[in-house]
Length: 140
Image (cartoon, rainbow, N blue to C red; front, side):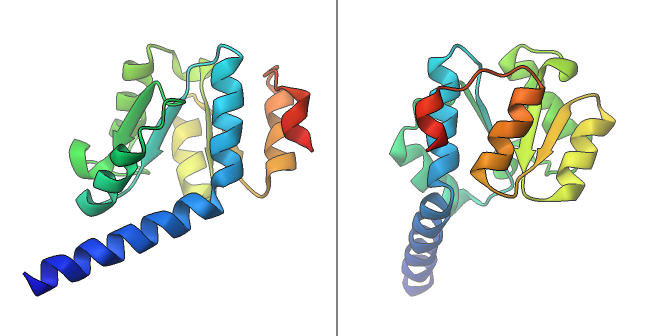
């Protein structure tokens, strides 16, 4: 019981910190969704984190793929293919944004486009190079 409570508390705190750090990317995802793009969320995560993510009911994601559910992790090709299939897109039509180069490389190996996250403005610039339209309001 104690171990479970500790795990529960840790997962919640870790999730809250993760979401706070990625807040601008969630705003970007909402912006892109509102502009008609399909949005997927791909994460290497454990079951306690998955619970908190699902509680938030992030409507900007058309598809969510979690390693703990799929039995495969980034950078394995299988997890990217699961995401693409569920989104209903070809690899060349997709752009993976991640802060780990190895994950970008793996996505590119199967034909996806990739952006190595540094900051929001850099991601917006690079998305523009792929012809992705973003609401100007987000750039502030």
